[in-house]
Amino acid sequence: MSTVLTAEDHVTLDERTIAEVVRFHGHMCPGLAMGLQASQIALREIGPNATDEQVVAVVETDMCAVDAIQFQTGCTFGKGNLIHRDWGKNAFTFFRRSDGRGIRLSLRPNAWQQDPEHRELFAKRRAGETTAAENERFLELHVAAARRVLEMAPEDLYEVVFVDAVLPPKARIHASVRCESCGEGTMETRIRRVGGRELCPPCFEAALAGL
Image (cartoon, rainbow, N blue to C red; front, side):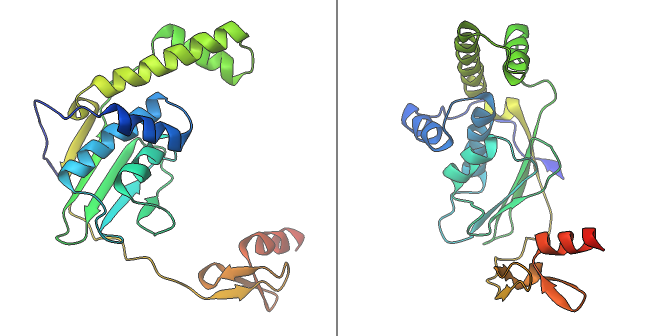
């Protein structure tokens, strides 16, 4: 890996784009803002998903940022060019199939921190202990924090490096097999066999638990 970006300036996201992504996600928050910033780098360095699966995104978290990445780059689970690795990292890798170009973005340590009041209200809200006034104050601070993220240069938020890696295979369409327990059709690659029967994953786990 080698560092590729040390840009001194950046393109500010326009309000229309921000509003569209917020509408898609459901609310404005710092996580969504981080995804918007990651998308800015991806679009600039890798390009948009001009053709089906031309761009592939590998995300190492399932946080709010992924919605912005889906909306902005066109990489989606349905097309098979959005791959989730459940590693709990605010890190995203983008590949371009045409020439194999790839970059990985990882959140810089301490690049963004909640202020103490925001952090305290966040904890109280998750515990269901906030008053109506505190909820209103939390949302105010939440949006303000997201705006601070959007005001940063993307390269100040993320470290960006070239990556040399084998491109993920293109999405495949698999046959559906009927589960012999629940009767529901299941992708053939997910079918498990136990006691001579072909089962979907939940029925397979239930069968094992009953052994």
